[in-house]
Image (tube, rainbow, N blue to C red; front, side, top):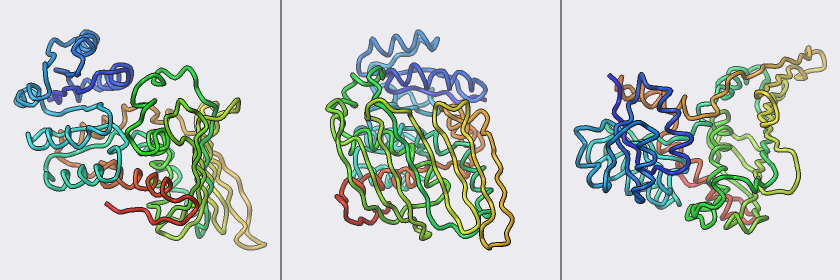
Length: 345
């Protein structure tokens, strides 16, 4: 049996990204209804989805819980605690978009709600956490010896043609750091998925574009809970420059270099081994990451299969994990060059 899913918030991302992903997984999901504050948008979405059920209010949707198995919520993140509480108190599992909340106070609320209703999952939609690159690199880490440090950098030119640029949640962000939390949690899902939690952050931020609404560029020094030190750079508001994404992990017997720049046909992992001693053999190998999980299909698959099997052990993006990603951004914003410990959920 497939899961009957209702979509709450039927804007650009719901229509252009979530709906196609759910339709690809028609063996798992059946879109049965939708709601949007502006009903005309919900009706447009419903027509594209091939459904007739358009709810007049969120309360009406929740009252129809016998017809709904799960909710896919795409609201501005400041509303995440409210929609999560509404769903869980009605016994309906819910997927919400990253970041987990607008700030750490609200993020704590989402975590507490998930703990209050442990049998009704809250799934954070963060597709970078399900990248194939993560497991591929983790498998190779022992080959480069004792891990010492890392360099992570994702930079690019400002996209004046971004279809989300005119939206209120981009121009007047309620979520801390604006672009830095909206896009930064993607980057941090990749980084922490491989190296584990971040213990502390020393950072400087700046704002390049007025259109960003707030600070939009971050340079930082980080320490992981396992003792690695490294740099994390994130900014997508520069002038004319090639969009680059690189992640290098350095050990005492080699290094691993991930190039996930969008100009490549697919991400590439370079493994350099040797160097522990003068006599150790030095080798270089490359792995091309084919069909990386750039769209939400894989995360929706994990979410749905877990619900159908009632086995949530495959869920990577729990509220606690998503809290950690936002808490790193929070620490960076508070740092102003000082070392700040990352708050725990």
